Amino acid sequence: MKRTSNIGDEGISSIRLGEMKICDLPIAEGARARSQIPLVEDTARQNKIEDVLAGFPKQRVDYLEGAIRECEVNILHIQEMKQQQQQLISEYTSQISLCEFRDNEIERIDVDDPERDAKIKDLSKRFPPYNVAAMQQQIIQSGESIVRADEVIAKEYNSIAELREVLVMCQARDAKLRALGAIVATG
Image 1 (cartoon, rainbow, N blue to C red):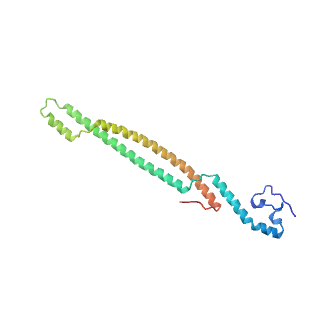
Image 2: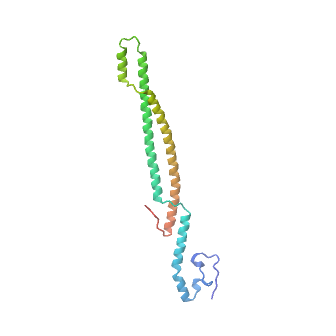
Image 3: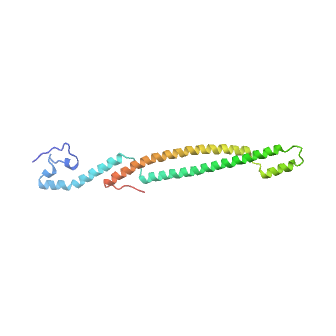
């Protein structure tokens, strides 16, 4: 009987029965022990899989990719809304300028001019009487919307960066799991 220490050995090579390696056991006992090696190997593989799972984020790759796509779509929609608000500001600013021009032209008409009412009516037809105060308020609100939109876009970009970091880790995790023969969950 050859007794051997297992200090410094790992895995199957560390197995000892009665302080003997499997290869040093009598034939019948060695055969029984060798029949258990696949179970030992699978247990070691399962332990490695658990170690990998414990060391990485839990999210699925397809979930993370979907979340990134959702953030990108949100950014596109918010940018479209920003463009609409900028266009509204431009249109209202133009209309306000036209109203100011009309008002200046009306002021230049002499009070004693016999055609004053007709000239004012003509100017009012060419330059509709918009509510300038309401348009100025809308311009302010649109400007505030643009500022908030920029903040939301910045947050979405931060979310994308964070999600991509986690995605890279999860892709590495999945590669290690596949190398260990594990089936990786997908959508």
